[in-house]
Length: 148
Image (cartoon, rainbow, N blue to C red; front, side):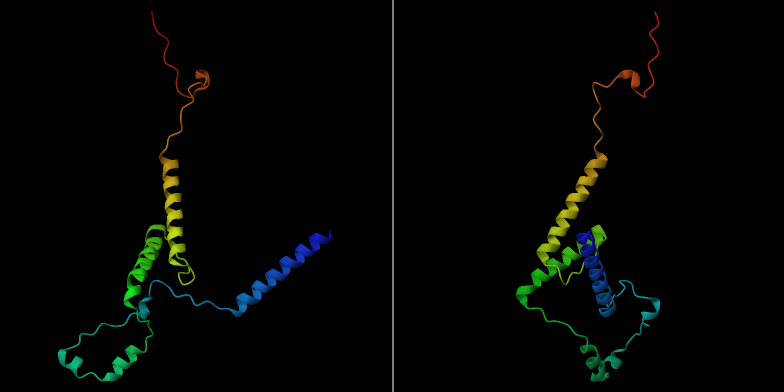
């Protein structure tokens, strides 16, 4: 009985801890599809308007943060993006790609591909017929008796 009380207390403690964590930590979720209101009107710029534009518009664009990519990282980042695209397009899955390593993402893709192949094999493989099955219990219609 004492063990049950301790287990219930532990579960209650874990539950309250996760509730407090959920209330204090808010995750920002961004939709993949932009709402129509977010779209801006397209404007056609003339050559003169581009040449006469002030540097303030460039300054506002440069405020968007980005990380520069060194030449030795280009291939590995491009490979990672292909893996992420495979997960999204082929398996309709999204993970926290900031936490998982490329090797972990590759392993997820391999496991999903194995599961998909296994499911396809199970669906497409007919069940073997039992050679020793009793013919009288068969659901197939019996052939008509031979006429003499």
